[in-house]
Image 1: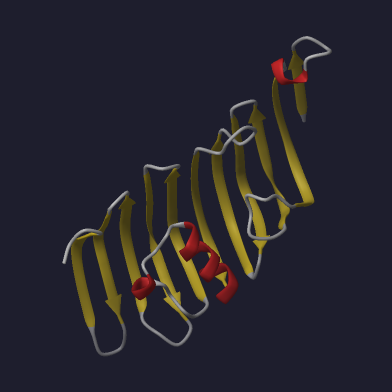
Image 2: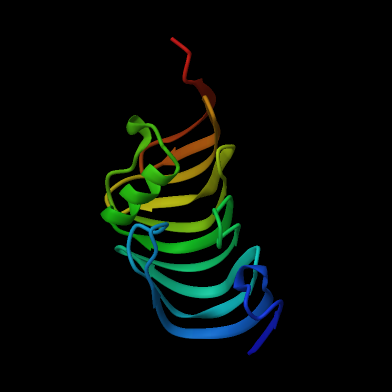
Length: 178
């Protein structure tokens, strides 16, 4: 584990730092999060601009995920978040994630999900994208690739499969479309 800090002693905002460490049994709360975040284990790299979490076992709300993520602007105003993850999300976590990405009401899942091969990218005020596989306990298997930009939801691929059906679609949905 390492930590280096440079800057004037009496001006902490001017400090430049870099740290690398392993974490275990860490819990934090933030107004940026929908609830306490617990990291059972993982690696952290951070400087004044970027916070990176690698190989983490994470719990938040009713979700348990294996997660790697990078956040930019996390000390001042978070402006970019990129994450890869898999695991299980309960109803609370599904609801919170749907609200975070501003998913239209008709597309919001309403049951717990298992997730695999998920990749989320959020850029403040610009775009949110998600790619991954979703498995509902009493429902179909879903493969999804979606991009949300101001005014447009682009479903690049949505495949829904169950015992009796296999359907795929792609489309663009504009806020101003009738």
